[in-house]
Amino acid sequence: MFAPYPVLRRQLATMLRDKAEQGGAVDDLRDAIGGVADDYQAMADLAARIDSAPLRPDWPYMEPSDYADIQAEQNARVIAATVDPADAVARARAGFLGSVAGCVLGKPVEVMPTLDELRDALERIGDWPLDDYISVRIASEDGLARLHPDHLESAREHIRWVPADDDINYTLLGMMTIERFGRTFTKYDLRRMWLENLPLGYTWGPERGFLTKQALLMGVDDEPEMDLEALPRTLNPGNELCGAMIRADAYGYASPGRPDRASELAWRDASLTHRGNGIYGAMFAAAAIAAAFVTSDWRAIGETALGYVPRRSRFAAIVGDSIAQVAAASDWLDGYRRLHGRYGEYGHCRVFQETGTLLNTLRFATSVGDGIAMQVSQGNDTDSYGAIAGAILGVKFGPGHLEPRWLEPFGDVIHTRLAGYYELSLDATANRVAALAAAPS
Image (cartoon, rainbow, N blue to C red; front, side):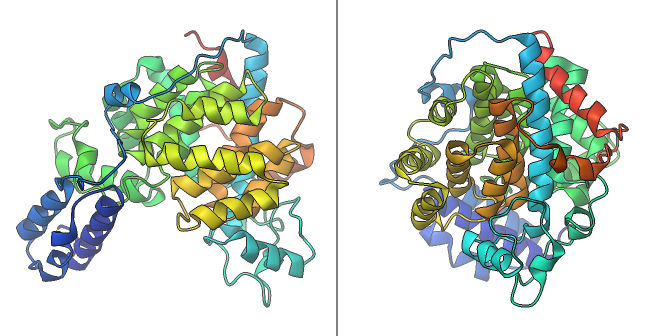
């Protein structure tokens, strides 16, 4: 059984929108989706035409996906700093715990809100400015119209453990990959880890597409012949969404003071499923975590990480401007207004505006707890970017900058959806993640 025709039409429409945003000359294909026959071969042929559409002659950006081509477009800077192994381990541990708290904080309101919507709802219940886990009361009369279904485990009144979340899954899967294969892991190693650990129903976007393609390719053959380099180039709607960016934390923890290595590890993972700016978001996040081990300056972290992204990409242009906007802001609310006013079209799971808000948080946060609340308050993909903010801030500030009240509700219990992860202790899990920072190069 293959996907129903209406599902394929929606996927083709998403692919066409993606290709247009990526500079593809697709105007002559816009009417083709409505006219394509209910026929799998006809739809496959149209998908191939979309995938192979040339760039428009006036397209000003260079957005490669192959690593050598990305390197050729980088303005990378070398960080001259000595990393103390014990300090690196402590900072990686703080980063992971910060990411867990940030993820759970954002989880109930992962319903694509804006800052104004969140502020209005929180003010109505006396919880603005946000400084604790979200209360279910936020969805009371005249509040948010809805909460994420997982609020039954992640709202303030219901937290008993760290609830399972895809952001946390991917950090731990990255950790498990390095533990098993070392930093020389291949895409085929990643494929094995995904097939052994990730449930299809707990993945979204290109990640779900990757696993679906694997199921179709495998049939009854566990090791079918395939080209993993080519897989994300075809039939891959949403290939610049944030899914790869939320998978990058472990590579930053494993590369203290080495944004070059962190970004390359993140590329290896991200390019399994994503293209272009979807890859760059992951490289940026990993490099930012790696840089935060050796500098606490928000701008140095952002500009260092941006140096590992192709300089003529949309990501570099938008994030570079975001750094300037945040630098000029009087406070974090002003920073948000500047960013949202320019890039508000890039909402939930779009890497551009969300990365700008991360920089806004990095500049104005006074602690990890303050920062994750600030990040979640800026809306959009609240749990994913709450997690990334917590990771960078935890490493940047180090241990002792996340109040115990953020971790106490979990009772030292963590749940995941990873088939091969059996540890239930949050403390023991944090120690395993932290050990990445001490592993041999």
